[in-house]
Length: 355
Image (cartoon, rainbow, N blue to C red; front, side, top):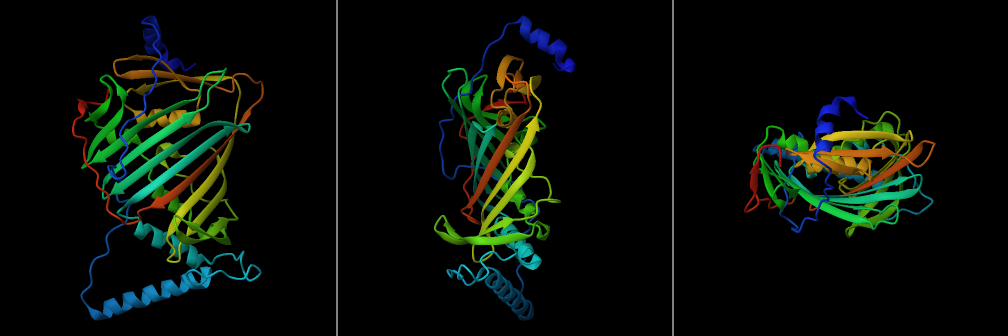
């Protein structure tokens, strides 16, 4: 048990325990979401000189030629015995990262679907439907957790939103299921909303991507590519949706322009058995709770007081051997480059980091 929390935990326990369950969010909008910071990508300035325009046209033609040489002409399918499993060139992999970064720099939508298992048994699934436009973004997420000991499975959901530098949450807190406007100094950072574009950092020539086939994603013809060397790739960065453990697979699907439409990663880790953990979490930190539940599906909220929760979980309590946790995350990029309408909620209870 964490000794640093003894005093506050004892205070909580003396006042009695009250189980707290999250209710489902009832707002379901397709475009009412908030967006990420621009992640370092800048708008390209307009150019007035014909010579520069000509140079840009030539560069675009070269990029198109590079795509065609690596993936074939748009809509085409190479003969299955003619280079279907070609290792992609370093230049093309760099083109994938650049073209995708520019296309997704300012606006769009992404859906993240995550699944976890413990020793092969499902421990839950979650879906984050994220829209972003400029520096505004919205994360509407839902989690489904299997029941244990004969209990029924549960589903919970919430919304994290940022509009014009202001943080909003939709979940259960002091005023029940409602919108909360968090004015605390760390309100936005504590949300840790996933930025799927950060997965593009995994597009490294060192991964030795191999083309393994062709398919369609959301009606768009795409080439399926798989990393054959995962050593040396950067750590996965997906905010609250970051899977724990060692990267075990990486697949991407890109269109004829070299823009990535889908990415899939898998991870694995081994954890010791029987270890108990406790943690203090702000009541309005729906994103932090989401991240904890993703890693520890049987997490329990033990008590609450003054805007804080004590949550606890035990790793593999029923077995005497370590457990193997595996996670898979699939990110689909949608509405690429299309501006999204993201507004502050009509009414929200103002809080200051306590919910």
